[in-house]
Image (tube, rainbow, N blue to C red; front, side, top):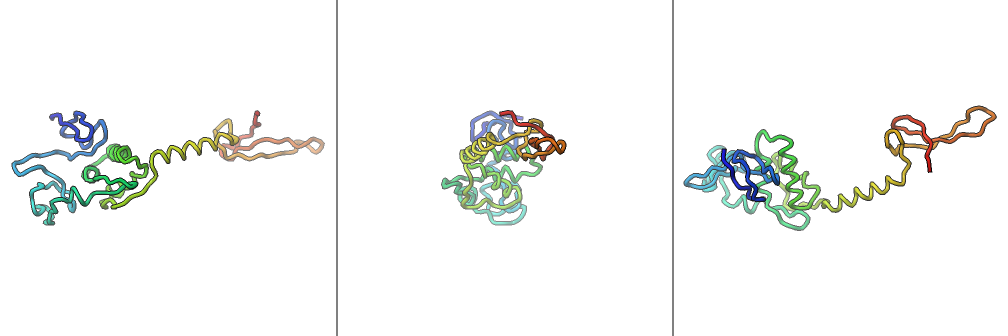
Length: 196
């Protein structure tokens, strides 16, 4: 086992690694160098091929020389990205969910698009990425979350479970008494008074 340099972040990683442990950049299982050139992955059968070959020796499909440069360009939120390394990384057999999530996260960080996990899920299913993809940015998601948290601050919370699924109720302890009001939590079925 030897150490190689990650092409994305420059960190040192094992040559056996499927993804970079530092940035999550997807790597080929093994990069083989021969006199003819570097091994890649056939886009039709996902088997290893040499880039200089004209035909895949496994499925017989014609290899388009620039498929790894042109066909996998995707315009994400108005900016073009080459998704070939992500397609290769997500096409690997026996990929764990942690490795898949790390690849997805690295694509989100690269593009700034929070919805990139949808693209990664489609790639894992064997579909090619779309030519154009518009999704929510990480900043838009963070803004939505902060607005949601602010809206929850002004609501009544159950002191036992923290739920906001509560309602105000009243009951009459006996016929001669006045109505007593309380809050009822529909999640944990507890009664409580709100201290203002």
